[in-house]
Image 1 (cartoon, rainbow, N blue to C red):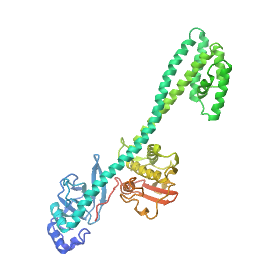
Image 2: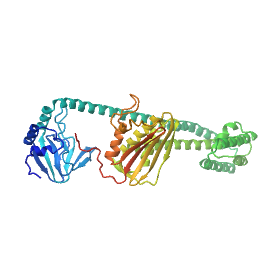
Image 3: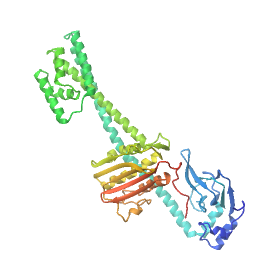
Image 4: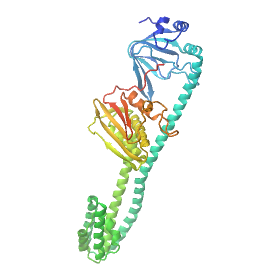
Length: 485
């Protein structure tokens, strides 16, 4: 190790991959301009947001790069590779941005750096590589703007599409609850009217008491009513309608479906007749029918509200807005939440098959970002199948890894383009139908951030994306390595 303040010789500089192609004059300039600096273990080399005054090249030691994300420090990379660099890496670009460090570098062990002042580094690059500078300016600004715009557009389109589906799913139970509430209001009013008719003095106290007991029994029958097949329900309605017609109750065909839905039968109607007598039978039955219908309507409202609550819960699980970014999660909860968001987008001709291994342990992960992976893979699978096919979501264990598979029966990925599917902006979809960022984002989340893997097997009728997540990843995971040329 050199002494702090020493300078490297041109020959020593040539051993660094960043400088190995420079000529003798350029190396001599670097040797004269740069200096060697040391940093003690567990110290900050440069801090995010501070003025970017120097360009650092690692000579020895171990360092990390990190950024602040929503108030928390997120480690991006950890390396001891000689020659990696950081700091004022954009000093030579002619862009209207504040010259600050984009991240924080920390020395984990005692570290040594070759350091160049930002102004000198920028001037050298501009004068030595003028053509490259024009290209880099255009490439940097263009790619940054394009990726920002396209990425935001893709997220907005995905969010809009999923939100539209969620809105549709919420609208159905909400409309059912509104309709049931309106009908319930009418039935309660009618029940009060019938009660007044029953209690006008024609029934003695004991008969009225028996009728109230039958009402309580009717409520209990609704709660325990079995789910009948269409054929069984039709037969039961015919039997009740015939009984009502035989005993002079008008509109039996209208009352029978409600009574059958509440679990009533002819034996129970016979007990009603025995309690109130033939003269008040129709009034009593209509009053009891209103009781049954109000219970059925309240059950419908309860189911609708429960459905709405479940959809809201799925949306919260999907967005993870109220959760810590890094947490221990059940991948099945994440998959189910994503599938709920996709429910309205799955065509009627596509069959969803879930093959879950519920014995899988929970996984330490960035849950919201894994949901983005499932979203991208499921959306691609649906696009590949069109209006008909089978979407399979499968989980299992592969050694120390949790495996999640998204499979479709679409046309498959051609072998000649398969090696490029994870490249940014590469897409097999028609022009205007895809941005080519979905699989790139998914790869970065799984591989770089979770230290997992994402693999693909594809042939016509059978395409499987297999996501592998470690059960004990290093925390926090690192999404990107330090830059290299």
